[in-house]
Length: 189
Ligand SMILES: O=P(O)(O)OC[C@H]1O[C@H](OP(=O)(O)OP(=O)(O)O)[C@H](O)[C@@H]1O
Ligand code: HPA
Ligand SMILES: [Mg+2]
Figure (cartoon, rainbow, N blue to C red):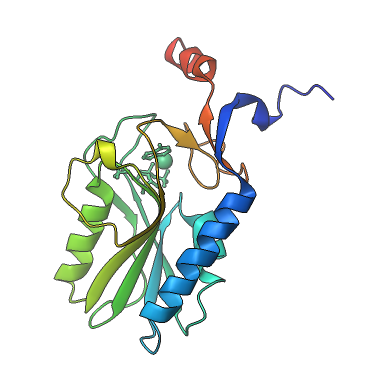
């Protein structure tokens, strides 16, 4: 069936299939289960990109935890980080003396992660670590540690499984690279 609304049409290459992602969640979940045993971590998903990863990853973490969310953003309309991280929705829980685990879909320039690690440390968290699905090391501008990650990615803009382009395509069940013509069409708008 030809359907121009079929969002698979915008993908050039799949980088991580649903099976790849499940394997990553299992592996990281096992590691985090060991590392957070007996600690009652506060697991904070960074909205909106981390929603899918947060739900799949934490189901593989066999530890008592508290789940919360924060909404921060720095990519307004496209590929480039504005460099300014905006806190839109704060975490509800008190982070003082807590072992915090931030869950991210991707660490790219590192601006977002640095902002959050600094903020939560300043508020008195006992530890602040990050588990990201993807780590785009080549683009790093802030020196920040990604404590756990699923895979490194090249310097390409990726979408799906939470990752958006112009606020769309988050619901693709895999991670892929956009077709160049999709990007071109938007640049010419
Ligand atoms: O390392 P950085 O260069 O800071 O980029 C990574 C951040 O950018 C994206 O969020 P975005 O600001 O696009 O918000 P969103 O999750 O709502 O899409 C992504 O989900 C990370 O949070
Ligand atoms: O490659 C990316 N894709 C989607 N959102 C992003 N935010 C930072 N890097 C990316
Ligand atoms: Mg985004």
